Image 1 (cartoon, rainbow, N blue to C red):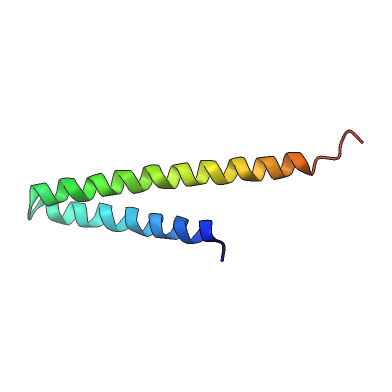
Image 2: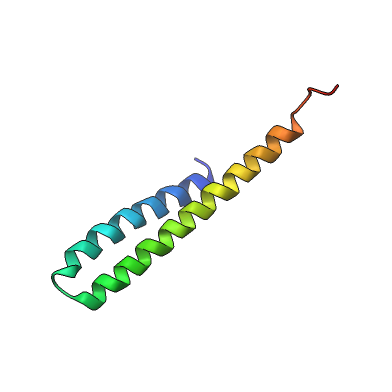
Length: 70
């Protein structure tokens, strides 16, 4: 498994847990719910950045293997 794949799974699990725990804490403790929602948003931003970075890397590899103009 690639290192980036591990980070994708960690961030995805963090986003899911952050959202679920945030909803549960809305009824228990509002400050804790806000903290979990901040963690949720940060993990989503990190996940989006990771996907964009990975796609850019794939695009560069595709451009390097482009043999249409030989």
